Amino acid sequence: MNKAGVFIGPSGVEYRDRKRPLWMVSLLVPGTVFLGPLLYMATGNALLLWLPLAFYYLTIPVLDMLIGEDQSNPPEEVVPQLEADHFYRWMTYALVPILLGAYLFGMWFVGTHSLPLHGVIAMVLMTGTICGAAGINLGHELGHKKTRIERWLAKLVLAPLGYGHFPIEHNKGHHRDVATPEDPASSRLGENIWKFAAREIPGTFKRAWQLEKARLQKAGKPAWSVHNDILQPGLLSLLIWGSVIALFGWKMVPFIAAVTLWSYLQLTSANYVEHYGLLRHKDANGRYERTQPHHSWNSNHMFSNWASFHLQRHSDHHAHPARRYQSLRHFEDLPTLPNGYFGMFLISYIPPLWFRVMDKRLLEKADYQAANINFDPARRAALIRKYAIKESAPTQQAA
Image (tube, rainbow, N blue to C red; front, top):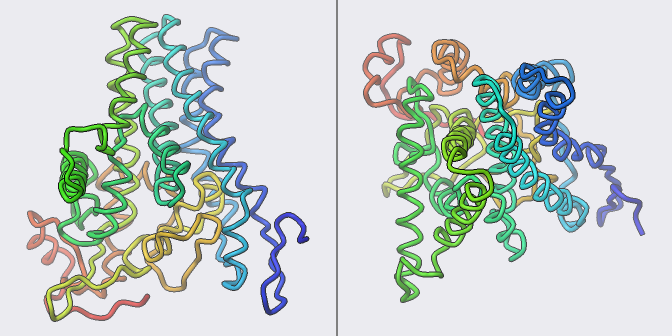
């Protein structure tokens, strides 16, 4: 029997997963949601409620810069063993009660404490960040899997956020349309995150409903029924929200709504940075080429990958969506983000800074060819002039 974290392939090659214990970071970082309130209860200083946010948006990007990047890959012949090891699966299962507890703790804390306005805002941002970033990320990892328990856990962890439509929209819609103008979840060159959010949030829900309605019609079932995989978690969302209101009063409605909105923005932020301006080409039959690693922005920054179950190895995920997080790979010459996701989220909230950092990177990857870029249609002509982009036939991009 192999030692924990040691895998031996058919050829005799031995692989030791040195990241195995580090996946615990994905459990520990969301626990920071408890830190601010506990410090507040100990000291009465509401400014301490902002500490976890400072950790997410300032400390994690600095750690990414200091610790650096990991470009190592497991040998392909041990991947079946790596993916069969239930340790990695139990890491994701263990995060479910932590996130549900974080959400309910945030509701209880705000519902039972008289906080200054800035303290309430801090709790909105912190609860929404934890449940949106870690929660939707976990729903993403679990929702891609084929086991019944993982798919139901995905619905459960997404329910407090009212985002139960995500697995349908993401798996059947985003993965089909990614890096094309038709995808509401792929951002475009020159499109700021706020404009993108106004297109992405309603657009993804509409696509999810259309996909689920078509599935049910094909099965001879009505869209408005218990068989609807959007309505099931939606009812659970209403139950959770109703319970919070029953316990703490109608004053919780604005807080629930604000947390939900900020949670939505966390997924929007991820979608925004993951595919900015990248474009798949059409073949002679008018069909889009198969999704390749170079159709997503990648990040190998170690700390934020440990904290997000390798979400930032997004290039391999889109090219091979069935792979589990522990086996996702680095590829050479990919579109690469200069920092991890939380550093990039912060930059994206300041559009001039985002464009300054990312436009040149995109243009270099696209070889300054308009045919290789997914443009904001309203700004296409101005951007072509500004950056001296060439309008010619598409060129083959490196995988």
